[in-house]
Image (cartoon, rainbow, N blue to C red; front, side, top):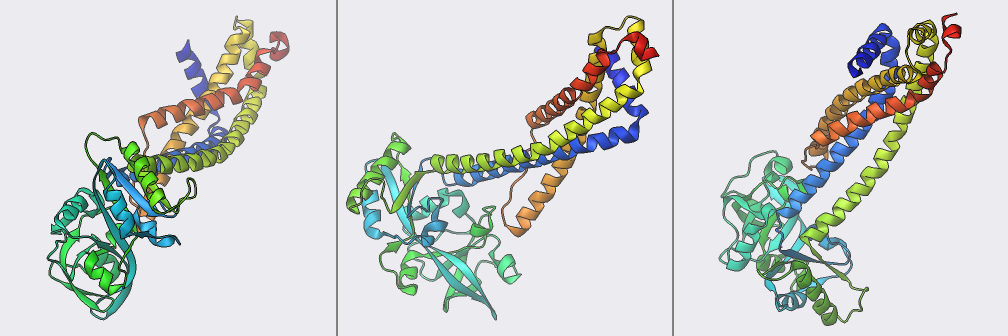
Length: 403
């Protein structure tokens, strides 16, 4: 029976190709908008998760003020962390290792060209070097990590030379940073973000002299020892720092977060924005549904005699309703299929634009669940839109319809 409904509906759609095509456009636009928003949003969320998983699941990040999404925000807060704060963190039970880094803006020079650059100033003791290597976006692809014997050595970001100077920087090359000459001893592995791929990393002791910063740290990274719950240790760190800085609970001028908390927070933000935009995109589906309803009303009027014949040979009201509702559902389904193709194509273009302009690399997540769910949704929209025209067709009296 379903095969008969499908054949009948498909034949009716093909009989009026132009009208069916124009009717489907509203569904195509609505579904394409929903697919691109969901796919890009999920892709961004996956990318964020991957980036912060590179830090490690047992990591704690302490940042000044409310800037809690990694070290890059440390310089944007009025409050400051110090080496004394680092000492407090290192003494908390469950903290395996803790190190402070300093983020500074500087001027890099290669040949005759000067460019502004972000410099990460990192400790160089043996434990710190191992700690940095375990952080995915700070691992070294060529050369070596900074060691205690390095003074004016620099590790350059994966894309630093190409993006800043339009040339490849190799090990042994020399770069001037704020007038001081540094030798390249390491090339950082690709982090997938413009921020870290264009960054320079120099020894913290050297930076303290260069930038006249003796006690400040921009952020503190801590690793939790095995056998301790990361969230419990983070709470202890927050309590000890609050007492050390004489700050009241809820009025802290610093933030303590675990990797999981950062991923969850960013995921919630992306999810809320995604939901709002998908809701707005769904409005176009309402327009598409109205188009299907209007088209089906016209179809019912054109096929009044056919309806009368079907009813006169024994077709029930329910059969007439299902025929027209199924036809409307097929229109929505076909529109949904082409909408998915259009949405996927636009999401690929969005990825390329985002990678080139913003420096964020991610892949739109068009999953089988998204495809199946979208097709089912578009079919349902079509069926609902065809309900009232189908009901009108089912209520026709055979004699009146044939006349």
